[in-house]
Length: 421
Ligand code: FES
Image (tube, rainbow, N blue to C red; front, side, top):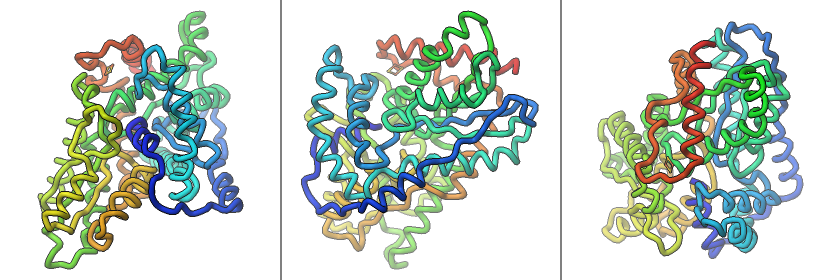
């Protein structure tokens, strides 16, 4: 939900707080850490169906401050995310250029960049190690990351796949694994549209000339109630609840917070609100409804109506009612990002006046339970032989995007190749 995150911060900028400075040595260490070594891939590897490319899709974020400008520029160019109509290519750059200095300060305040690349690469590499053990027939599993608005971009990932021995007449199997557990056309949908676009540009000629030898794609397009996700979130909630005195613990309100959507998107029929609610229900069932809870939505921006209630207002209103034990739970992202580290920690909690009782649950980040869950989910997908979920084939009732139609048609068409592999 990049638009939502970022549009809020883009619109507001840094109005409060004193950002810390990231010294140059830290920046260079950070950059070195992010330079993940490439893994060579060959099509004659050991698994009878391998190798398998596991491609994590996510919005991404600027890893360093100099990358903020290009990140915002791509974000405002995405019509799936921020529909600006025919003026997109004119208005988008103007808005991003105006917002960049303010957003740089926000990323500076959270340590000099987004940790999303670090966590995505770590999670994928660890998941692939598990997959090599539990799914030897599709091994070796090779981790790739494709971000929508930051490096490594989809184009870069696709070229790396080709350079590593996938496609180019040799075929090979790749799984596009969305790291948004709940599907929205503005997030997973946008990433898949971008993947489809680069597949057509980089492999369309091969497909039309030879009819085969291109990469066989399948998609894990949503997993809002997967047991690994539910268990990992529940364990993090239980751990944080222990910080409240025992006599108050069961009365603390659990505030699940997800990125909001403009009501125009909701009313178009986007599946995201229902899938987020499904995650919340599953987590509360796992917790045996140990606490009162609410689902609220963050990062709204602008005068248009957005799905509510807003997280910040929810916290303010409960505090006004005398309920100060509030536990915020990020429920729609798989790692820390500017919405947790800046919006929730610095803005919502930092300005609540009750930093001792308003707390936030840890993001999933390096949770071994979560990473095992990712591996279990990927194995089930590989075993299923399905190109994508049935649900992915259904467009929003009010969708008018030809890009959506063509992209969905392409991924559904991969079923024959996946089944015969
Ligand atoms: Fe949802 Fe096109 S906007 S399928």
